[in-house]
Each structure stands twice: as structure tokens, then as C-alpha cells.
Image (tube, rainbow, N blue to C red; front, top):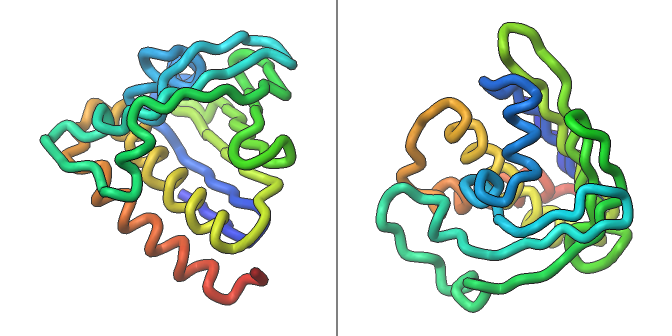
Length: 176
């Protein structure tokens, strides 16, 4: 696990316990993507739409209350644009406040049925956005790894709080 966080770009590497084709399905199929991140349809081509549906109650296996600051987002739907689509090795899409904010996922066969996932989120505007996205991506990737490994996720929001605190600490000295 490698994380590099700056005020304008985040980079995460994870060795996942599943083959590339399985991880690709978790990135692109709505039913699987909602188990670790957000569901929604995808038009699998450059220029196509990718839809996101905020329903993070699905991420915890336990009965966990949603933090108040996220409660207004429940059921929210929006679309972003696919800017790279290379099945089953890479997908990138706009993500965040504007078209300059891009989340890129690259998958490489790591042997023994494992996949090296690299996520780079670029075009972030400032340290506060980086901490928010950094905490989110870290916690969502932890859920993805758990789902692929057949493990339960008792409390997504505890993972999220811890990840956001770590991201804020890592970015404390970064330029705002």
C-alpha cells in the first residue's frame, strides 16, 4: 500500500486479492461498484457518462448511522464524463467540482491472481479538497479490498473518519 498526497494530486497503490478482470468489474459494473463506492450506470466509452448514486449506507455491514454532514447526500445522483476507457486495464473520469478533476484507475496483473491497482486523482484545487478526497478514496479502497477478499466491513464511517484524519495530517504542511 502506497499513498502519496499533495494539495493538487493524490496517488494510491493497492495490491488487491483478485485478478484484473474481477477488479475491472468492481470498477465498472453498477451492482459491484455500489458495494465499495457508488453505483450508477456507465456508458463505457471516452466521452460517455458515468453516473454516481450516493448510498453509503450500503458500505457498512453493520447498522451504522451516517454522519450528519453526509446525510443530505443520500440518494443524490450526478454524472461525470469518461475521459479514458481501456478495458480491462484503465478507466478515468471527471470527478469533483470541475472537469479538471480526474480520477484515473489503472490495473496491472501482479501474478498469483492479484492485481496492482493505481488510482491517481489529479486536478484538485487545494489542501482542503485533497484531504476530503484523500480520506474518501482511502476508505473506499479499503472497502474494495475487503469485498474482494470476502471480509466484512463493520463500519465504513469509522474507516472514513480515520482516513480523513490521516489525510489531513499528511497534508498539514502542503501548500494550500
